[in-house]
Length: 238
Image (cartoon, rainbow, N blue to C red; front, side):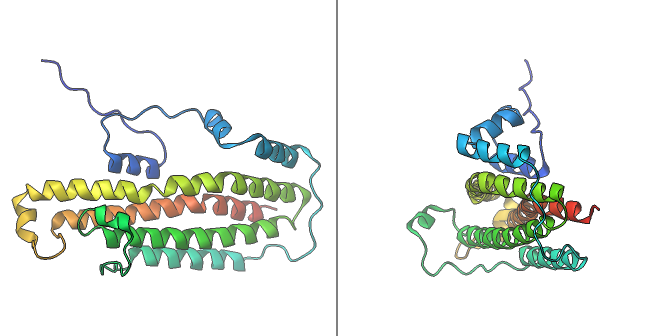
């Protein structure tokens, strides 16, 4: 008898591979080429704006203070604060005013979903503020760097809405992952013995889920900070 075909490995960054594992589909469709995907994300207005940013003469640097090493300390402090919030204990109290859709969530998952959403909002706020500030500094260093700052502004305006839409699906995938682990635990004597039917589900499987949730948040943090890392590298280059 022929062996069942194994699941094809998912290629790409660690965050994408992690989400593919949460999705747990039998097959993974081939991802379209980067130019093809970008063509889907850029409408003609954005494409023209980006073309102008790339083709026009570099703008003259704006007056003002340039980069100083204190920005590295601010970057480190901001990122450390986000990591600490991700690693902190999760508030497991049920939401005070749950949305109607939350009634359909797996039992006990609502606090984890809320925690993930809270961390996403914090990452979006902090990364957006840092990115804008570093871009302003980049625009003051040289005409070439002012052009880079302009291109980054166009890319953020174009890609951020799509990024926000795609990342909003991560809690959904985590919910599916939670439900699978919960279902599997119901058939595992060790997990079943650790659970209390009168309380929220518990057991070794939940430790695994909490670890996966934090890994997902840290991976998303890396994704959100990639443009900031690039801007910092450009600012340090003389």
